[in-house]
Each structure stands twice: as C-alpha cells, then as structure tokens.
Length: 403
Image (tube, rainbow, N blue to C red; front, top):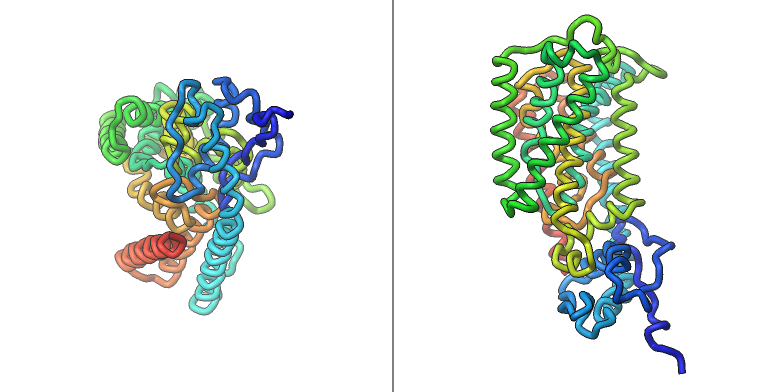
C-alpha cells in the first residue's frame, strides 16, 4: 500500500487574480518535506497566498511541527486545492479593470484633441507628460508594493525632498555627481528602513509612523538647506543631463522611469519576494504560519519605497537643477491616488504595477489638459478628489459583489 503522504501534491505557488503573480511551475512537492522548516520557508508564499484567495477560510492552527493541526498541513492542502476555482473570475476582473483604465486614457486623449488640438497631440507635449509622470511614477512603484503588502506610506514626498537636499549640499557636491546619486538613494532607503522598523518591530500603525516621518523629514530638509533652494553646481552637470539628453527624442529620465517600472513588475510578479508581498497583504497570520517572516518582509517593503524616493530625488534634481525642502509637496497623495485608481486594494493583497502606472498617467494627462486649457488649479484639485472618491466607491462595490 502506498504512503498517503507521498500522494499529496503541493499547491500553487501563489495567488493569481489578474494582478497577482502566476503560479510557479517549479514549486516542489510538500510531501515528506512538510515537517522541515526550510521547506515551509521555500513554499510559504504560495501557501499563504492560496489561503488568502479563500474569503472566509481560516488557517489551520499550528501543530507541534509548525504546520496544520493534523501535523501534515492537511487543511492547508485543502485550502490550496480550492484556490484554482476562484482564479478565473479574478483574472477576468483584473483584465477588465486595466481595459477600463486604458479606455479612460483614450477618452482623455479625445478630450485633448477636441479642446486643444494644436497643442495636445504634439511631440513636445507628449514628452512633457512623460517627463512629468517620471518622478511621481517612480514613487508610485514603491507605493504599490507597500499598499499591496497591507501598509501605507505618507512620507514619500518629504523623503524625496530630504534626499534631494542632502545630495545637493556643497559638501556632497564636492565629491561629484556619482556620489550625489548614491547619497540620494542611500538617504531615501535609510528613511524607508526607519519607517519599516517602527512599523514592523515597533508595532506602530503605518499611518502614524509615516506621518511622523513626513514631518521629521520635511523639517530636517528645511534645517539642512536653511529653507533655501540649493543649485546643482558646475562640474555636476551629469545630473542635469538626465533631463536634457534625449535618446530617440525622449529624455533619459523617462527611460530610467521605464526601467524602474519593468524591474518593479518583474519583482512583484516573477519572484518569491512578490508572492510573499501578496501573501502578507492578503492574510498576515496565514503568511506567518506558512513560514514567512512577516516583520522582516514588512520592513523591506518600506525600504523599497524609500529606495524609490531616492531615485525620484535624482530625477527631480535633474528636472529642476535644484535640491529643495519644498520638492515633493503632496506627492504622497498623488502616488496613493494613482495606486487606488489602478485597482490596488487599500487593505492589501491585490494590485498591480501596470494598473498603478495607468492610474498615474490618467492623473498626469488630466493635469496637462487643465494647463493647456488655462483652467484654475483649484478646479484641477477638485476633479482629482472626485476621481479618487469614484474609484474607491467602485472598488468597494466590486468587493461587495464578489462576496
């Protein structure tokens, strides 16, 4: 008679809802390795992700070997086998959401062609839209990871300002443009690590921890710059050339933005880190029982957000040739709004990089249309607020209809 444990297949590598990563075909069988801690760590993201796909299913209590109550992950296996039943509708919802965002972009483009045909459809205007989207777009990539992981980061704009000020001090500029770039990236990453440590190990609410960082980073930037705008000095023109140098008519900083988006997509959809991000955001307790170090992963998510802020600081220094404590004002709201418009759940566990970038482009095109039509900036803010409210209401309605 064959051993029943050897006939129990491993579940899928992680949740797939149209925005989540695909199943990892190389996932190893759970079988005899079920009692191994290292095996639980290796397959943790997939098990936790699959558990989050079942709306009302509670994870099995941990037994003496750290798995399900039957000692062999019995309930966990049952949860995993149920997941594929839910994947099809979720995948279709994800595709429909992206198509809706593309349709909104097309509608805005039609509005631009009708209202300002002589200015909107020009090469220079399209390049201007991409350049404007690049800085906030890099921040949006980091914000997407944090929100999918079940958190929120209100400090991104202030951290970007602090990184730009630190990188443009005379002491830093004396070492050349490469040191300026490294300084901006390190300052942003360090601020993100502080956020992550306070939230993951200090058990602070993400809203409060990042709000405190927002205030502190903005104040430190003002103190370092004495509330003055710091210019990029001669000899460090390489920073400015990121904005002025064009390849195929497109500034280099747009290519940097595109590279960050591609890397972010690959990490989120094709790596264990991405699968664990969905698992932690969808059900932290199930992720912990599956062997994921939830605290460490949470801290790394905020560090990644800070890294994106550092890169964005380099881009804004290139665009404005300055470092200033006023840089990034309200960028956190634009980034979070773009992520929400893109379909990422504020409660975590579902979202996509592509959706966030489409949401960002919608906001950027709206801003461009208001400028070209000479409309009041206040009206622009009101329009953005209404779009955010509608997006959240539609998101809630979609969730209620599935439950």
